Length: 415
Image (cartoon, rainbow, N blue to C red; front, side, top):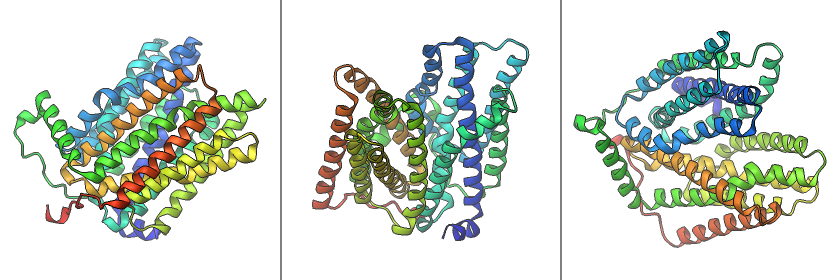
């Protein structure tokens, strides 16, 4: 099935190769930013500052990037952004060779790279529905998620080998090369894009961007499926982020003498399970629905809940496995539904709106549960968050079971 899609649609092959190459470089350079920041400052606070510089742009420009992605030639803007990122990264290598590199160079370049990502990511996501047929999307989404998650697991392993052969600063050189390759692969993608820039040049003004985002928000309020999708995503991610990103490590460190090693082992188990489930989903469901999305969220929540009761390693492995089954079902369903229900001229804003909500939910979760963790144990927080994820999923499953979604899929053939 996967081979048929790649054989019959070479655009998909170039798209996946470009995404994989770019993602691989991002993982490697992301590690370099953290490694070099710590080497230069020996400060966890300054190292955290680099991580923050990679999140803030999406809160500031995420929605704007989606609006602009809906107006411009998507292929052209993707190539331009890839080419701009090359000299930005190479400037860090040059400053290092001249012994002029300092911490603020890392902060500025990291911030600018992610700002460009605010415009690149929604445009990149928006061309996938254009170059695929609906019956191909479940398979292509699965392949894309498998590639990006596989690289997330593989990247740190490769970085260990690179550190033994080249200076860490040349991780940036490596990433610059991946951007060049990505630009070439995107250039090879052939598709006809419907011109959606019939509005006046005033759309490029700030007022035009704000109006575009406001218009999209009003449209979303009238779409039952999309509105429910966004709302449930915010709730589920809010209850998942802290316990998964911080709580799991803390719980292992507090309860096991070799907590860090166990944490790495569990993440590897999780990554392998997610990849396997990603590949199986298109074999089980050709088309995904809001019910399947909520079903995945329910399984995901059960996995988080099980981790709250994990006192032995087998329970940890079972909890991680259950979460690794639910997450890709939920994630792939969300992407599929966005591709299905968003009109072509709203794809950029739709995906950027989704990403913006994810980042906001992540930030609020880290702040709220980071504070609450001063009073409640990590184990209790796992149980609370797991229960809330399960309740949210069950409630919305009951709601949509009683009434049909009030949205008709947008037919691009009639556009």
